Length: 252
Image (tube, rainbow, N blue to C red; front, side, top):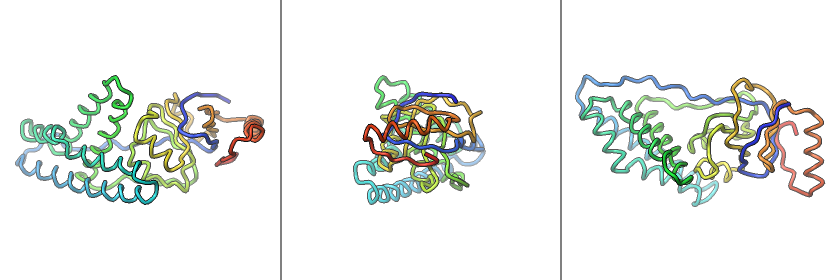
């Protein structure tokens, strides 16, 4: 058994197999040999499609968890129309001959890096929002949408999760989330709390643990890898003895 520590989003215990979530690298042309005006029009069409999708997510979240959390997607819509962001994309297309896809990707890298460099933890967490809106525009430009199909209940592990990814996960089979990076101040953290998804962030978890059994203790931010039966029973007895709410998923 190995023990790792992180920061939990909610007091809950969950156990299950680890599944590492990997996003495919988009394959795109970097520069266009056609009319730059066509590329700008492609960008704006994708931008408007993304805004419509975000409006749909807003109303879905509004009905499920309320205005406070749903407003995340209104903020994303405003970011997509931000003057500096849009002009950066347009300048890369018109001035450097970039394709719409490459221009959006470069804008994502630039703006996310600027937020990451800020002193405020809250502002640093906004980098994930920039990545989220940019990835949404890229999906619209390139066609298709990544959907994670889970064959069985599992705990997902990734560097971080984008807010809209939380809305796409099959919550019937999602036992919990672990991130190697992430932040308790992020919009993703707000969403997982609102949807009562157990999550622990800032955990140094290597991919070699793929498929192994893990136990997430949200009361202490502890993760037990390949936990022994005695450890599971100890946790059960400990929390029952202390009168804490016993909400466990997975094998516990």
